[in-house]
Length: 273
Length: 260
Image 1: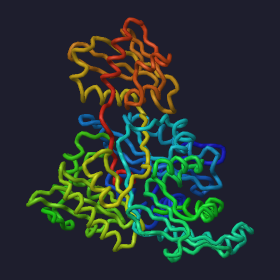
Image 2: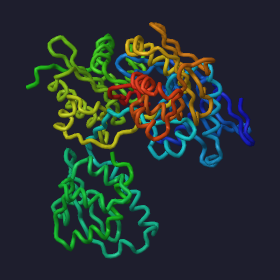
Image 3: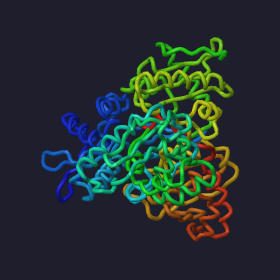
Image 4: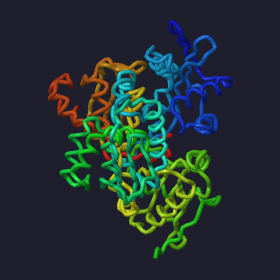
Protein backbone atom coordinates (compact mmCIF):
# COMPACT_ATOMS: atom_id res chain seq x y z
CA UNK A 1 0.00 0.00 0.00
CA UNK A 2 1.26 3.45 -0.90
CA UNK A 3 -0.11 6.40 1.03
CA UNK A 4 -0.11 9.93 -0.37
CA UNK A 5 -1.29 13.02 1.48
CA UNK A 6 -4.88 12.54 0.40
CA UNK A 7 -5.22 9.15 -1.30
CA UNK A 8 -4.09 5.56 -0.85
CA UNK A 9 -2.92 3.20 -3.62
CA UNK A 10 -3.67 -0.50 -3.28
CA UNK A 11 -4.44 -3.51 -5.49
CA UNK A 12 -7.91 -4.19 -6.88
CA UNK A 13 -10.45 -6.09 -4.76
CA UNK A 14 -13.60 -7.76 -6.09
CA UNK A 15 -15.81 -5.21 -4.36
CA UNK A 16 -14.05 -2.43 -6.37
CA UNK A 17 -15.13 -3.82 -9.76
CA UNK A 18 -18.23 -1.69 -10.20
CA UNK A 19 -16.52 1.57 -9.24
CA UNK A 20 -13.50 0.86 -11.45
CA UNK A 21 -15.69 -0.19 -14.40
CA UNK A 22 -17.63 3.07 -14.00
CA UNK A 23 -14.47 5.17 -13.83
CA UNK A 24 -12.99 3.54 -16.96
CA UNK A 25 -16.25 3.89 -18.88
CA UNK A 26 -16.63 7.54 -17.98
CA UNK A 27 -13.02 8.23 -19.03
CA UNK A 28 -12.87 6.30 -22.30
CA UNK A 29 -16.48 6.63 -23.48
CA UNK A 30 -18.37 4.35 -25.75
CA UNK A 31 -15.62 1.87 -26.61
CA UNK A 32 -15.57 0.40 -23.13
CA UNK A 33 -19.29 0.63 -22.48
CA UNK A 34 -21.19 -2.50 -21.55
CA UNK A 35 -19.20 -5.66 -21.33
CA UNK A 36 -15.79 -4.43 -22.51
CA UNK A 37 -14.27 -3.94 -19.07
CA UNK A 38 -15.55 -7.35 -17.94
CA UNK A 39 -14.22 -9.01 -21.08
CA UNK A 40 -10.86 -7.27 -20.94
CA UNK A 41 -10.19 -7.93 -17.27
CA UNK A 42 -12.22 -10.41 -15.16
CA UNK A 43 -13.06 -12.65 -18.17
CA UNK A 44 -9.47 -12.60 -19.40
CA UNK A 45 -7.87 -16.03 -18.69
CA UNK A 46 -4.60 -14.29 -17.72
CA UNK A 47 -6.18 -11.62 -15.51
CA UNK A 48 -4.40 -11.08 -12.20
CA UNK A 49 -5.91 -8.63 -9.73
CA UNK A 50 -2.49 -7.81 -8.33
CA UNK A 51 -1.74 -6.08 -11.65
CA UNK A 52 -4.55 -3.56 -11.22
CA UNK A 53 -4.03 -0.67 -8.82
CA UNK A 54 -6.66 1.68 -7.48
CA UNK A 55 -6.29 5.03 -5.77
CA UNK A 56 -8.77 5.57 -2.99
CA UNK A 57 -9.70 8.67 -1.04
CA UNK A 58 -11.90 7.85 1.89
CA UNK A 59 -14.22 5.19 0.47
CA UNK A 60 -14.11 6.58 -3.06
CA UNK A 61 -12.10 5.11 -5.96
CA UNK A 62 -10.53 8.14 -7.67
CA UNK A 63 -8.08 6.42 -10.03
CA UNK A 64 -7.10 3.07 -11.47
CA UNK A 65 -4.28 1.59 -13.54
CA UNK A 66 -4.50 -1.77 -15.30
CA UNK A 67 -1.67 -4.00 -16.48
CA UNK A 68 -2.22 -7.16 -18.50
CA UNK A 69 0.46 -9.85 -18.43
CA UNK A 70 1.45 -10.95 -21.89
CA UNK A 71 4.09 -12.87 -23.82
CA UNK A 72 5.26 -10.61 -26.60
CA UNK A 73 7.31 -11.34 -29.69
CA UNK A 74 10.19 -8.90 -30.15
CA UNK A 75 11.52 -10.45 -33.35
CA UNK A 76 11.33 -13.69 -35.31
CA UNK A 77 13.24 -15.49 -32.55
CA UNK A 78 12.80 -13.44 -29.35
CA UNK A 79 9.73 -13.79 -27.12
CA UNK A 80 9.63 -12.17 -23.67
CA UNK A 81 7.37 -11.91 -20.64
CA UNK A 82 5.91 -8.47 -20.50
CA UNK A 83 2.92 -6.42 -19.57
CA UNK A 84 0.58 -4.18 -21.49
CA UNK A 85 0.05 -0.93 -19.61
CA UNK A 86 -3.64 -0.67 -20.38
CA UNK A 87 -6.37 1.63 -19.12
CA UNK A 88 -5.23 4.29 -16.67
CA UNK A 89 -8.02 6.58 -15.50
CA UNK A 90 -8.31 9.33 -12.91
CA UNK A 91 -11.52 11.13 -11.88
CA UNK A 92 -11.54 14.62 -13.44
CA UNK A 93 -11.54 16.40 -10.07
CA UNK A 94 -8.41 14.48 -8.99
CA UNK A 95 -6.33 15.12 -12.11
CA UNK A 96 -3.01 16.99 -11.93
CA UNK A 97 -2.55 15.85 -8.33
CA UNK A 98 -0.08 13.05 -9.05
CA UNK A 99 -2.62 10.19 -8.86
CA UNK A 100 -1.59 8.65 -12.21
CA UNK A 101 2.10 8.84 -11.33
CA UNK A 102 1.45 7.29 -7.90
CA UNK A 103 -0.54 4.43 -9.47
CA UNK A 104 2.27 3.63 -11.89
CA UNK A 105 4.89 3.74 -9.13
CA UNK A 106 2.71 1.53 -6.94
CA UNK A 107 2.42 -1.22 -9.59
CA UNK A 108 6.13 -0.95 -10.38
CA UNK A 109 7.06 -1.38 -6.72
CA UNK A 110 4.58 -4.24 -6.25
CA UNK A 111 6.05 -6.22 -9.13
CA UNK A 112 9.71 -5.26 -8.96
CA UNK A 113 10.67 -8.89 -8.26
CA UNK A 114 9.00 -10.19 -11.43
CA UNK A 115 11.70 -8.55 -13.58
CA UNK A 116 9.43 -7.95 -16.55
CA UNK A 117 11.59 -7.57 -19.64
CA UNK A 118 9.05 -5.42 -21.47
CA UNK A 119 6.26 -2.97 -20.75
CA UNK A 120 4.32 -1.58 -23.66
CA UNK A 121 1.34 0.65 -24.19
CA UNK A 122 -0.59 2.63 -26.75
CA UNK A 123 -1.14 6.34 -26.21
CA UNK A 124 -1.38 9.51 -28.19
CA UNK A 125 2.11 10.99 -28.73
CA UNK A 126 1.33 14.12 -26.70
CA UNK A 127 0.28 12.16 -23.60
CA UNK A 128 3.26 9.88 -24.03
CA UNK A 129 5.66 12.84 -24.07
CA UNK A 130 4.01 14.68 -21.18
CA UNK A 131 3.26 11.75 -18.87
CA UNK A 132 4.39 8.23 -19.82
CA UNK A 133 7.97 9.00 -20.86
CA UNK A 134 8.91 11.04 -17.76
CA UNK A 135 7.32 8.43 -15.48
CA UNK A 136 8.17 5.18 -17.26
CA UNK A 137 10.91 5.94 -19.81
CA UNK A 138 8.83 4.89 -22.82
CA UNK A 139 10.23 5.19 -26.34
CA UNK A 140 8.45 4.56 -29.68
CA UNK A 141 8.40 0.88 -30.65
CA UNK A 142 9.76 -0.07 -34.08
CA UNK A 143 7.35 0.99 -36.82
CA UNK A 144 5.66 -1.23 -39.31
CA UNK A 145 1.93 -1.06 -38.66
CA UNK A 146 -0.43 0.85 -40.91
CA UNK A 147 -4.09 1.67 -40.28
CA UNK A 148 -6.56 1.79 -43.15
CA UNK A 149 -10.08 3.19 -42.98
CA UNK A 150 -13.11 3.08 -45.21
CA UNK A 151 -16.03 5.39 -44.57
CA UNK A 152 -19.35 3.61 -45.11
CA UNK A 153 -21.69 6.46 -44.18
CA UNK A 154 -21.61 9.90 -42.54
CA UNK A 155 -23.78 9.10 -39.53
CA UNK A 156 -21.17 10.36 -37.07
CA UNK A 157 -20.79 13.62 -38.99
CA UNK A 158 -24.58 13.98 -38.89
CA UNK A 159 -24.42 13.63 -35.11
CA UNK A 160 -21.74 16.35 -35.07
CA UNK A 161 -24.05 18.53 -37.21
CA UNK A 162 -26.91 18.01 -34.73
CA UNK A 163 -24.61 19.04 -31.85
CA UNK A 164 -23.46 22.09 -33.86
CA UNK A 165 -27.07 23.16 -34.54
CA UNK A 166 -27.83 22.89 -30.81
CA UNK A 167 -25.01 25.34 -30.16
CA UNK A 168 -26.39 27.67 -32.87
CA UNK A 169 -29.80 27.59 -31.18
CA UNK A 170 -28.21 28.45 -27.86
CA UNK A 171 -26.57 31.44 -29.53
CA UNK A 172 -23.05 30.16 -28.85
CA UNK A 173 -21.72 31.51 -32.16
CA UNK A 174 -23.42 34.90 -31.94
CA UNK A 175 -23.91 36.41 -35.39
CA UNK A 176 -21.03 34.57 -37.04
CA UNK A 177 -23.33 32.61 -39.39
CA UNK A 178 -25.12 35.84 -40.33
CA UNK A 179 -25.27 36.00 -44.14
CA UNK A 180 -23.84 32.58 -45.05
CA UNK A 181 -25.64 30.63 -47.74
CA UNK A 182 -23.36 27.90 -48.96
CA UNK A 183 -23.68 24.27 -50.06
CA UNK A 184 -20.54 22.15 -50.11
CA UNK A 185 -20.26 18.57 -51.29
CA UNK A 186 -17.34 16.47 -50.05
CA UNK A 187 -16.32 13.66 -52.35
CA UNK A 188 -14.04 11.36 -50.41
CA UNK A 189 -12.65 8.40 -52.34
CA UNK A 190 -14.37 5.15 -51.39
CA UNK A 191 -17.11 6.92 -49.40
CA UNK A 192 -20.59 8.15 -50.28
CA UNK A 193 -20.74 11.92 -50.98
CA UNK A 194 -21.41 14.24 -48.05
CA UNK A 195 -23.39 17.37 -48.83
CA UNK A 196 -23.60 20.14 -46.22
CA UNK A 197 -25.66 23.31 -46.51
CA UNK A 198 -24.77 26.19 -44.20
CA UNK A 199 -26.97 29.22 -43.61
CA UNK A 200 -27.90 31.55 -40.77
CA UNK A 201 -30.01 28.83 -39.10
CA UNK A 202 -27.22 26.30 -38.94
CA UNK A 203 -26.09 23.29 -40.98
CA UNK A 204 -28.19 20.82 -42.94
CA UNK A 205 -26.46 17.48 -43.47
CA UNK A 206 -28.66 15.93 -46.15
CA UNK A 207 -28.66 18.83 -48.61
CA UNK A 208 -29.26 18.05 -52.25
CA UNK A 209 -25.99 17.37 -54.02
CA UNK A 210 -27.18 19.07 -57.22
CA UNK A 211 -27.28 22.40 -55.38
CA UNK A 212 -23.59 22.28 -54.45
CA UNK A 213 -21.74 25.60 -54.75
CA UNK A 214 -18.35 24.07 -54.07
CA UNK A 215 -17.13 20.50 -54.54
CA UNK A 216 -14.22 19.31 -52.41
CA UNK A 217 -12.53 16.15 -53.69
CA UNK A 218 -10.11 14.25 -51.51
CA UNK A 219 -9.30 10.86 -50.01
CA UNK A 220 -9.76 9.65 -46.45
CA UNK A 221 -6.04 10.00 -45.66
CA UNK A 222 -5.99 13.68 -46.70
CA UNK A 223 -9.23 14.39 -44.84
CA UNK A 224 -7.83 12.76 -41.73
CA UNK A 225 -4.60 14.78 -42.00
CA UNK A 226 -6.55 18.04 -42.40
CA UNK A 227 -8.47 17.16 -39.25
CA UNK A 228 -5.28 16.48 -37.36
CA UNK A 229 -3.38 19.59 -38.45
CA UNK A 230 -3.13 22.65 -36.25
CA UNK A 231 -1.71 24.91 -38.95
CA UNK A 232 -4.28 23.71 -41.46
CA UNK A 233 -3.85 26.60 -43.88
CA UNK A 234 -0.28 25.79 -44.92
CA UNK A 235 -0.95 22.10 -44.93
CA UNK A 236 -3.97 22.63 -47.19
CA UNK A 237 -1.89 24.65 -49.62
CA UNK A 238 0.54 21.72 -49.80
CA UNK A 239 -2.32 19.26 -50.37
CA UNK A 240 -3.73 21.51 -53.11
CA UNK A 241 -0.39 21.81 -54.88
CA UNK A 242 0.12 18.04 -54.83
CA UNK A 243 -3.39 17.35 -56.10
CA UNK A 244 -4.52 15.45 -53.01
CA UNK A 245 -7.17 18.08 -52.37
CA UNK A 246 -9.25 19.68 -55.12
CA UNK A 247 -11.87 22.43 -55.02
CA UNK A 248 -14.39 23.19 -57.75
CA UNK A 249 -16.82 26.11 -57.76
CA UNK A 250 -17.05 29.83 -58.43
CA UNK A 251 -14.34 32.03 -56.91
CA UNK A 252 -16.97 33.93 -54.89
CA UNK A 253 -18.30 30.71 -53.33
CA UNK A 254 -14.81 29.35 -52.69
CA UNK A 255 -13.98 32.57 -50.87
CA UNK A 256 -17.19 32.10 -48.83
CA UNK A 257 -16.01 28.56 -47.99
CA UNK A 258 -12.62 29.92 -46.90
CA UNK A 259 -14.29 32.58 -44.74
CA UNK A 260 -16.56 30.01 -43.09
CA UNK A 261 -14.01 27.23 -42.79
CA UNK A 262 -14.52 27.31 -39.00
CA UNK A 263 -17.99 25.76 -39.46
CA UNK A 264 -16.60 22.74 -41.32
CA UNK A 265 -13.70 22.49 -38.91
CA UNK A 266 -16.16 22.47 -36.02
CA UNK A 267 -18.16 19.66 -37.63
CA UNK A 268 -15.34 17.56 -39.03
CA UNK A 269 -12.95 17.92 -36.09
CA UNK A 270 -15.13 15.60 -34.01
CA UNK A 271 -15.23 11.86 -34.51
CA UNK A 272 -16.14 11.16 -38.14
CA UNK A 273 -15.01 7.53 -38.59
CA UNK B 1 -14.76 -14.88 -60.22
CA UNK B 2 -12.87 -15.75 -57.07
CA UNK B 3 -11.52 -19.31 -56.97
CA UNK B 4 -11.57 -19.30 -53.19
CA UNK B 5 -14.59 -19.95 -51.04
CA UNK B 6 -15.54 -17.91 -47.98
CA UNK B 7 -17.63 -19.04 -45.02
CA UNK B 8 -18.22 -17.90 -41.45
CA UNK B 9 -16.61 -19.39 -38.35
CA UNK B 10 -17.37 -22.89 -37.07
CA UNK B 11 -16.19 -24.56 -33.87
CA UNK B 12 -12.92 -26.33 -34.56
CA UNK B 13 -11.57 -23.63 -36.91
CA UNK B 14 -9.39 -22.17 -34.15
CA UNK B 15 -6.35 -24.43 -34.69
CA UNK B 16 -6.12 -23.53 -38.38
CA UNK B 17 -6.60 -19.82 -37.68
CA UNK B 18 -3.89 -19.72 -35.03
CA UNK B 19 -1.49 -21.70 -37.23
CA UNK B 20 -2.06 -19.35 -40.17
CA UNK B 21 -1.59 -16.21 -38.03
CA UNK B 22 1.69 -17.43 -36.52
CA UNK B 23 2.97 -18.48 -39.95
CA UNK B 24 2.01 -15.30 -41.84
CA UNK B 25 3.43 -12.95 -39.19
CA UNK B 26 6.40 -15.11 -38.15
CA UNK B 27 9.01 -12.52 -39.14
CA UNK B 28 7.39 -9.65 -37.25
CA UNK B 29 7.75 -8.54 -33.66
CA UNK B 30 5.29 -6.56 -31.57
CA UNK B 31 2.44 -9.03 -31.08
CA UNK B 32 1.34 -11.83 -28.80
CA UNK B 33 2.14 -15.20 -30.41
CA UNK B 34 -1.24 -16.84 -30.90
CA UNK B 35 -2.50 -19.87 -28.98
CA UNK B 36 -6.03 -21.22 -29.31
CA UNK B 37 -6.88 -20.02 -25.79
CA UNK B 38 -5.57 -16.48 -26.46
CA UNK B 39 -7.32 -16.23 -29.84
CA UNK B 40 -10.64 -17.37 -28.38
CA UNK B 41 -10.39 -14.64 -25.75
CA UNK B 42 -9.07 -11.80 -27.90
CA UNK B 43 -11.35 -12.43 -30.88
CA UNK B 44 -14.20 -14.86 -30.30
CA UNK B 45 -15.16 -13.73 -26.78
CA UNK B 46 -14.80 -10.02 -27.60
CA UNK B 47 -18.13 -8.31 -26.85
CA UNK B 48 -18.54 -6.79 -30.32
CA UNK B 49 -17.67 -9.98 -32.23
CA UNK B 50 -20.29 -12.46 -33.41
CA UNK B 51 -19.45 -15.73 -35.12
CA UNK B 52 -21.14 -14.31 -38.25
CA UNK B 53 -18.45 -11.63 -38.28
CA UNK B 54 -15.54 -14.10 -38.49
CA UNK B 55 -14.85 -15.01 -42.13
CA UNK B 56 -12.54 -17.74 -43.38
CA UNK B 57 -11.28 -18.10 -46.95
CA UNK B 58 -10.34 -21.49 -48.36
CA UNK B 59 -8.39 -22.34 -51.48
CA UNK B 60 -9.67 -25.85 -52.11
CA UNK B 61 -9.61 -27.30 -48.60
CA UNK B 62 -6.72 -25.14 -47.42
CA UNK B 63 -7.35 -22.19 -45.14
CA UNK B 64 -5.67 -19.24 -46.88
CA UNK B 65 -7.04 -16.29 -44.92
CA UNK B 66 -9.43 -15.08 -42.26
CA UNK B 67 -10.86 -11.84 -40.96
CA UNK B 68 -12.50 -10.95 -37.64
CA UNK B 69 -14.93 -8.02 -37.89
CA UNK B 70 -16.51 -6.39 -34.83
CA UNK B 71 -19.71 -4.35 -34.75
CA UNK B 72 -17.60 -1.42 -33.48
CA UNK B 73 -16.27 -1.17 -37.05
CA UNK B 74 -12.86 -2.58 -36.19
CA UNK B 75 -11.42 -5.48 -38.11
CA UNK B 76 -9.64 -7.04 -35.15
CA UNK B 77 -7.60 -9.49 -37.24
CA UNK B 78 -6.99 -9.76 -40.96
CA UNK B 79 -4.58 -12.41 -42.04
CA UNK B 80 -4.00 -13.74 -45.53
CA UNK B 81 -1.35 -16.20 -46.74
CA UNK B 82 1.30 -14.76 -49.03
CA UNK B 83 0.10 -14.14 -52.57
CA UNK B 84 -3.58 -14.83 -51.85
CA UNK B 85 -4.87 -11.49 -53.12
CA UNK B 86 -8.16 -12.95 -54.30
CA UNK B 87 -8.84 -14.26 -50.81
CA UNK B 88 -7.96 -10.85 -49.35
CA UNK B 89 -10.44 -9.11 -51.67
CA UNK B 90 -13.16 -11.67 -50.99
CA UNK B 91 -12.72 -11.40 -47.20
CA UNK B 92 -12.80 -7.60 -47.30
CA UNK B 93 -15.94 -7.68 -49.46
CA UNK B 94 -17.71 -9.97 -46.98
CA UNK B 95 -16.57 -7.89 -44.02
CA UNK B 96 -17.73 -4.58 -45.53
CA UNK B 97 -21.13 -6.11 -46.42
CA UNK B 98 -21.47 -7.50 -42.90
CA UNK B 99 -20.49 -4.23 -41.23
CA UNK B 100 -22.79 -2.20 -43.50
CA UNK B 101 -25.54 -4.55 -42.38
CA UNK B 102 -24.88 -3.90 -38.70
CA UNK B 103 -24.86 -0.15 -39.37
CA UNK B 104 -21.31 0.96 -38.62
CA UNK B 105 -20.01 4.30 -39.96
CA UNK B 106 -16.53 3.20 -40.92
CA UNK B 107 -14.24 0.18 -41.04
CA UNK B 108 -10.70 0.19 -39.59
CA UNK B 109 -8.08 -2.40 -40.51
CA UNK B 110 -4.52 -2.71 -39.17
CA UNK B 111 -1.96 -4.39 -41.42
CA UNK B 112 1.83 -4.49 -41.70
CA UNK B 113 3.28 -1.73 -43.87
CA UNK B 114 3.78 -2.97 -47.39
CA UNK B 115 1.93 -6.25 -46.83
CA UNK B 116 0.39 -7.91 -49.88
CA UNK B 117 -3.08 -7.07 -48.56
CA UNK B 118 -2.46 -3.32 -48.82
CA UNK B 119 -3.26 -3.37 -52.54
CA UNK B 120 -6.54 -5.19 -51.83
CA UNK B 121 -7.42 -2.58 -49.20
CA UNK B 122 -6.80 0.26 -51.65
CA UNK B 123 -8.89 -1.48 -54.32
CA UNK B 124 -11.72 -1.83 -51.79
CA UNK B 125 -11.69 1.96 -51.18
CA UNK B 126 -9.68 2.04 -47.95
CA UNK B 127 -7.28 4.93 -47.29
CA UNK B 128 -4.35 5.03 -44.90
CA UNK B 129 -4.84 7.18 -41.81
CA UNK B 130 -2.48 7.86 -38.89
CA UNK B 131 -2.18 4.70 -36.78
CA UNK B 132 -2.00 4.47 -32.99
CA UNK B 133 1.60 4.31 -31.85
CA UNK B 134 3.02 1.62 -29.63
CA UNK B 135 5.57 2.62 -26.97
CA UNK B 136 7.91 0.34 -25.07
CA UNK B 137 10.04 0.38 -21.97
CA UNK B 138 11.47 -2.22 -19.60
CA UNK B 139 11.21 -2.88 -15.89
CA UNK B 140 14.41 -4.89 -15.98
CA UNK B 141 17.14 -4.10 -18.53
CA UNK B 142 18.93 -7.27 -17.34
CA UNK B 143 15.89 -9.45 -18.12
CA UNK B 144 15.58 -7.79 -21.53
CA UNK B 145 19.25 -8.43 -22.30
CA UNK B 146 18.91 -12.00 -21.03
CA UNK B 147 16.10 -12.60 -23.54
CA UNK B 148 17.99 -10.93 -26.39
CA UNK B 149 21.25 -12.75 -25.72
CA UNK B 150 19.94 -16.24 -24.98
CA UNK B 151 17.60 -16.31 -27.99
CA UNK B 152 20.41 -15.30 -30.33
CA UNK B 153 23.46 -16.89 -28.72
CA UNK B 154 25.07 -17.41 -32.09
CA UNK B 155 25.52 -13.67 -32.52
CA UNK B 156 27.46 -13.37 -29.25
CA UNK B 157 29.31 -16.63 -28.58
CA UNK B 158 32.74 -16.69 -30.17
CA UNK B 159 32.59 -13.00 -31.13
CA UNK B 160 33.28 -11.61 -27.66
CA UNK B 161 35.41 -12.55 -24.68
CA UNK B 162 34.49 -9.86 -22.16
CA UNK B 163 32.42 -8.97 -19.16
CA UNK B 164 30.41 -5.86 -20.11
CA UNK B 165 29.29 -3.93 -17.04
CA UNK B 166 26.48 -1.57 -17.98
CA UNK B 167 25.68 1.45 -15.79
CA UNK B 168 22.52 3.36 -16.73
CA UNK B 169 21.68 7.01 -16.13
CA UNK B 170 18.20 8.50 -15.62
CA UNK B 171 16.45 5.22 -14.90
CA UNK B 172 12.72 5.40 -14.14
CA UNK B 173 11.31 4.40 -10.75
CA UNK B 174 11.74 0.71 -9.87
CA UNK B 175 14.33 -0.12 -12.55
CA UNK B 176 17.81 -1.50 -11.76
CA UNK B 177 20.69 0.82 -12.69
CA UNK B 178 23.38 -1.76 -13.28
CA UNK B 179 23.79 -5.14 -14.88
CA UNK B 180 26.50 -7.11 -16.59
CA UNK B 181 26.78 -9.44 -19.55
CA UNK B 182 29.61 -11.94 -19.28
CA UNK B 183 30.60 -13.77 -22.45
CA UNK B 184 33.42 -16.28 -22.02
CA UNK B 185 33.84 -19.12 -24.52
CA UNK B 186 30.38 -20.62 -25.04
CA UNK B 187 29.01 -19.31 -21.74
CA UNK B 188 26.80 -16.23 -21.68
CA UNK B 189 25.60 -14.87 -18.36
CA UNK B 190 23.49 -11.79 -17.60
CA UNK B 191 23.48 -10.66 -13.95
CA UNK B 192 21.90 -7.67 -12.18
CA UNK B 193 24.28 -5.40 -10.30
CA UNK B 194 27.82 -4.24 -10.93
CA UNK B 195 30.52 -6.98 -11.11
CA UNK B 196 33.73 -6.75 -9.09
CA UNK B 197 36.16 -6.92 -12.03
CA UNK B 198 34.50 -6.14 -15.34
CA UNK B 199 36.66 -6.00 -18.43
CA UNK B 200 34.57 -3.17 -19.92
CA UNK B 201 32.39 -0.49 -18.32
CA UNK B 202 29.64 1.00 -20.48
CA UNK B 203 27.72 4.08 -19.33
CA UNK B 204 24.68 5.45 -21.10
CA UNK B 205 21.18 6.78 -20.49
CA UNK B 206 18.28 4.36 -19.90
CA UNK B 207 16.30 5.61 -22.86
CA UNK B 208 19.40 5.72 -25.05
CA UNK B 209 19.93 2.01 -24.36
CA UNK B 210 16.30 1.28 -25.26
CA UNK B 211 16.67 3.36 -28.38
CA UNK B 212 19.68 1.30 -29.49
CA UNK B 213 17.98 -2.03 -28.70
CA UNK B 214 14.72 -1.15 -30.46
CA UNK B 215 16.40 0.35 -33.50
CA UNK B 216 15.75 4.04 -32.90
CA UNK B 217 19.40 5.09 -32.96
CA UNK B 218 22.82 3.53 -33.45
CA UNK B 219 25.43 3.05 -30.72
CA UNK B 220 28.04 4.84 -32.87
CA UNK B 221 25.84 7.91 -33.09
CA UNK B 222 25.37 7.90 -29.31
CA UNK B 223 29.12 7.75 -28.85
CA UNK B 224 29.67 10.67 -31.22
CA UNK B 225 27.03 12.67 -29.35
CA UNK B 226 28.86 12.05 -26.08
CA UNK B 227 26.00 9.95 -24.69
CA UNK B 228 27.92 6.68 -24.53
CA UNK B 229 31.07 6.26 -22.43
CA UNK B 230 33.33 3.23 -22.59
CA UNK B 231 36.19 2.34 -20.23
CA UNK B 232 38.83 1.34 -21.22
CA UNK B 233 38.53 3.30 -24.45
CA UNK B 234 40.30 0.59 -26.48
CA UNK B 235 37.20 -1.59 -25.96
CA UNK B 236 34.97 0.87 -27.84
CA UNK B 237 34.91 -1.32 -30.95
CA UNK B 238 33.83 -4.37 -28.95
CA UNK B 239 31.07 -2.36 -27.23
CA UNK B 240 29.72 -1.02 -30.53
CA UNK B 241 29.72 -4.56 -31.99
CA UNK B 242 28.08 -5.90 -28.82
CA UNK B 243 25.26 -3.34 -28.82
CA UNK B 244 24.78 -3.83 -32.54
CA UNK B 245 24.45 -7.61 -32.04
CA UNK B 246 21.85 -7.07 -29.30
CA UNK B 247 19.80 -4.69 -31.44
CA UNK B 248 16.40 -5.90 -32.66
CA UNK B 249 15.95 -5.95 -36.39
CA UNK B 250 12.83 -6.25 -38.44
CA UNK B 251 9.44 -4.60 -38.42
CA UNK B 252 6.82 -4.66 -35.73
CA UNK B 253 3.16 -5.29 -36.36
CA UNK B 254 0.39 -5.16 -33.79
CA UNK B 255 -3.03 -6.40 -34.85
CA UNK B 256 -5.95 -4.41 -33.44
CA UNK B 257 -6.96 -7.48 -31.40
CA UNK B 258 -3.81 -7.03 -29.27
CA UNK B 259 -4.53 -3.36 -28.79
CA UNK B 260 -7.34 -3.54 -26.29
